[in-house]
Amino acid sequence: MIKSSNAYLLKFQIGPVQDFIAQARSTRDLWSGSYLLSWLVASGIRALRLHPNSELIFPVAVGQPLLAEPFDASNSKALLTPNLPNIFIASVSGDAKKIAEDVEAAVIKEWTAIASAVWNERFKLGLPDCEEDQFFAQVKKHLSVSWMITPVSGDNAEAYAHDYQRNGWQLDAVRQTRDFKAWSFGGWQTGFEKDSLSGREEAVAGGRDIQNRVNPLYQHLFKHEDHLGAVNLIKRVWHRVYLEHQPGLAAAVVSFKILSTRGIAARDSSADADENMEAVGGEKYLAAIAFDGDSIGAWVSGEKLPGGSDLRQHHKQFSACLSEFALNLVRSIVELDHEGFLIYAGGDDVVALVPADHALSCANALREAFQTATHTISGRNGLTPDASAGIAISHFKSPLQDLVRAAQAAEKHAKNTIGRPAFSVTLMKRSGEIDVWGAKWIGGGLELHEAIVKAMTEMRLSAKFPHRVCALLSPYLTSSIQEDASDFNAHDVIHREFAHATDRQKIGTGAPELATSLDDYLRSLGTEPQACLDAIFGLCKSVAFTYRNHPSSDPAERQHAP
Image (cartoon, rainbow, N blue to C red; front, top):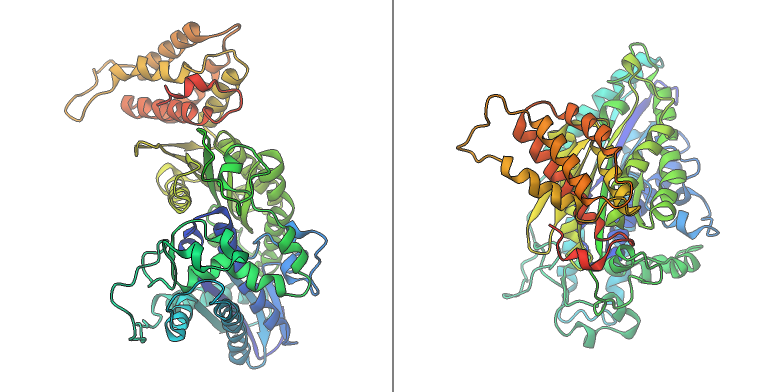
């Protein structure tokens, strides 16, 4: 912390984030949006570093590939992994307002430079009749930059905590009352198509004949007939027209392979996202994971720390823990252990795509790694940081942005409805039906789910087992106008029907260990009969749906999946 009578805290934030990232047709679009945000944040931090009286507090700069000068291109995956959050905190002294304005100007300058590089390639990109004012009006309107500087009231820990809290309140107020900027460009042509991914901006490129207009160098990026506004066009092509021309990045960008959704679902590492995979068939299912730390704002603000804690020191320690998780643990879990593709890993926040049958085990492994990385952080009453996860599963040909948004919604459902720390799974069936199931991490649901999958994988239970359980329990479901008998014991009924299904569907030794996991789960659910039944139905449907993607699954069984 800079000690000066003219010292300030600076909190800087850019957006939008979730909607911008989720607007994606392909895995490359998902990665590109995430990386673009990290790239812009990095440009702001570099501008901050030009001022000698400044110190980055959060996130930690050590080990961040995007903040290295020059770039280390020896590990292209690390360098091209989006891992900077959209917010950073710094201590500055001197003319704090000028420093903040310089950082903002650097971010906007970089965003404009990227947009200009795309515009300069407009003829090769097949922009039909786009006007320059139209293009850059969308560019200018997109980026949201907010910052707040707060005078430091003292050099001690108490003063820092007070100033940090005040800074956060002030920035929240700024973001809630930001100026509304209406479209100022009046040259829109009537009948213009809207952006296919956002549904808001007028399209500047794309359409049915895009393959005929675009230069062969870029045709692989326009496999669909999407209409794209300026922002989503930039997201689609900026790695080719801008990133490849940055010092130290050309070789890394060219060699960086992004798996297609089909490749991830089918565990096929040769299926590149830039190739045309539309002709590929198969009943392969894909999962999107949205993983997020619980109450991170409260952890960062010091609300969860014991009284008298040094918040300034806590920020450095917590930032280092989050950096260890994001930079050194996440990728191996997602890509090596669970055959997926990492989209984003920024501190406590992770977005990843994995084969459907890996989703729960991957999310659980991320949670365990997060707990390991943050085990030195101790809150009141021994509380330690934890996390929740949202999972959405669909066929690999389903719209990717719908899948990602469903995972984001599932993560909120886990936190706010089930109750953090928890997970929630959304099953998006090709018929249009949607099933939702979730549970606390600790409570038996995860263990029971994994125990059933393990028994089926080892051929100790038939793949029809979860369907049989649902069939046996369905008569006990009541409608809104019915009531359960006063002496109805749902736990006993579920145990009996599970035992019956296990005995009838087993192959070999069966799965006697299910009884213990089932008992633990039912205890965590309470005694309300219909809630218990609904939870068991949700669990069994999740097992049946995801098991179809498992290599040991019999294709003949898939048509019977619920």
